[in-house]
Image (cartoon, rainbow, N blue to C red; front, side):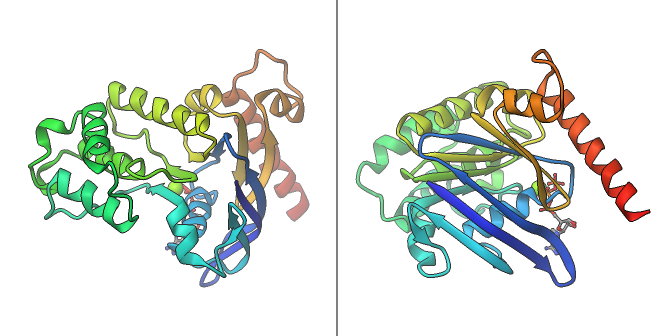
Length: 250
Ligand SMILES: Nc1ncnc2c1ncn2[C@@H]1O[C@H](COP(=O)(O)OP(=O)(O)OP(=O)(O)O)[C@@H](O)[C@H]1O
Ligand SMILES: [Mg+2]
């Protein structure tokens, strides 16, 4: 289980995340959606320990990030918004390097073979990462996240730039993670995917949560009928929140 409590993040004087709390239960897929600059990437980067939070508490399976950062990092996997793989390794070496870092070399060859097949990287296994296309690098970053059995998987816009087969494989891997009771937190602008894939959605705007729940609960928050799509709900709630803010400022 992933637990975020009162997360605040300032980049110098910019307040990017303003006191966000949520949990992702075991076997749950939660979508993090919000306009550009809402703070989605910042939340994910704080949880992974890539950037240091200003205030708050983050726990994975009861382990506190501030107390035992190394243990938390071992429990999570992260697909960043812009992957920056080691370009002078081959695809196979890169996967092996990540597995070594997580000390999970047990059934590595079998696992790597499966991942490379799933993401159409097997024929490129001996090529340097440098020579891969953008989408292939994205698929390698995804394969790296699944090379070890992380308890919590965080994905930042993972579907951008990958082909339909890659997207389908990723969705299947996410559903497999749910089956084995892992926690998945996925940030995306693809609202139709979020609607179908996620058990719960968190909508953030300007660093705060403006709504969260199942699609049905979000319909109620937006006072919309059951036929409304997540896109309708999202646009209504984010616009409403802007109006409220403008009224309170004036
Ligand atoms: N390294 C940084 N230094 C300073 N400000 C930053 C930095 N990274 C993000 N910010 C600011 O923090 C806020 C939240 O940015 P963040 O990248 O978390 O948004 P996001 O929801 O992921 O947006 P997008 O949908 O465009 O990916 C923005 O105002 C952004 O300009
Ligand atoms: Mg982002």
